[in-house]
Length: 482
Ligand SMILES: [Zn+2]
Image (cartoon, rainbow, N blue to C red; front, side, top):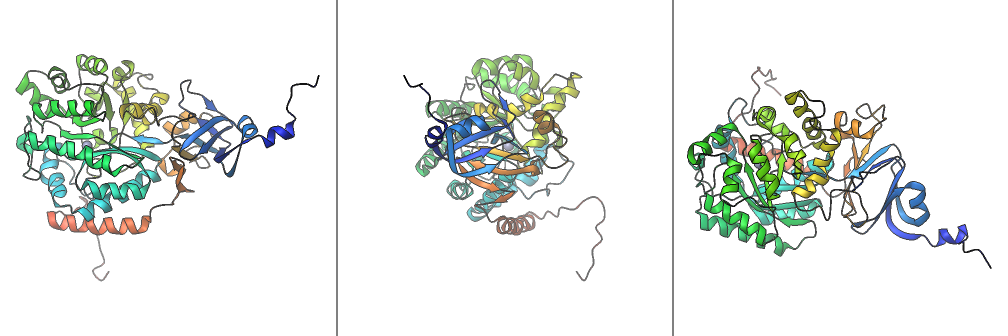
């Protein structure tokens, strides 16, 4: 009897054809077993991952017309930004030295109120280009205006997103701080949220999911908060809000209700597994257990916490939230609060700030920081069935780092180099749903020069309208003839 062995030649002929193979280098999968392939490869067809394995095994089973040589690269799941506003302000122009509520009243809200549909489109395109440049493939937009224009720009960029309309009823404990801009009552706000779901669903884009987005931070009534939490659950969406963002906010709620912001959410029945709370820089242990019990997700924005002096190292409970199994995301926030969109910097801070705060070198590990920027973010955004890890059947969202420079080298442990050393500028290639949106550091879908020119012109107009002239404290010497 002939041996039951397929000759090598036939095995090659039998190889399955895929669209794209990434071959060589470190592949950090963040899969169930958290496998890292030293000489790994990823096979992609259409918008999905077909296989992840070592180079030899994968090459024996698949061939592709298009192969990206990822030797000397680190291949990982696309980074997920849990909090990135598109409704934003000119970068670096917010005057330094004020507390959040003053910044919001005098600078942020007046800017928002002045933005046209065309300006929102331009800001969106530029912001998505910036995120992609630093390896972000998915982000959560916590409430924008001119939603149809935003959706158009998102489609152009090719990025994955959850988005909803900026909504509040100015009825919470900090309602007095709200401007006249976008004034609405609870019913109007709820209708706006329902309309937002409808607008995003009607747009019917494979990369864009809806969100039920209220501002929070004490600017929304209990009635609206409860209705929004219920709406998100019933519509299988995500309820996104800012919560427990400062001691000032905590004090307002303690004075008004006798308990803290997250506990208040729990008591009024507005905490469930469809809730995603951002910042959460002030918590007590009782609130940690309420979040864990409810299944809600939490997103931290370490750059914002530092720049806006939130006290996250004193009153944050990041190690406890992780230990309790809460789905945690990392964000960069918007220009007023954070001048960069680099999730590498966020991972660095997320891993290190709690260690100093607790004087505990194991408070948050490098691996946990990577999880927050990938699978944790995916869980918090309720998208982990699709993204967050490199696994067969998941969407082909991939971030590829070039490791040739000092931020990565010498390279012995890719986890350590990524979290403690790498910068987002070492991102070489970004793939979203199988589409290469950044190649060798260059955008394939967005004209970055044009996007930047538009945004800088809009910024100048916005600042003129506001009467703000952003200048450093030091004197600027300029040539009068220039
Ligand atoms: Zn925000």
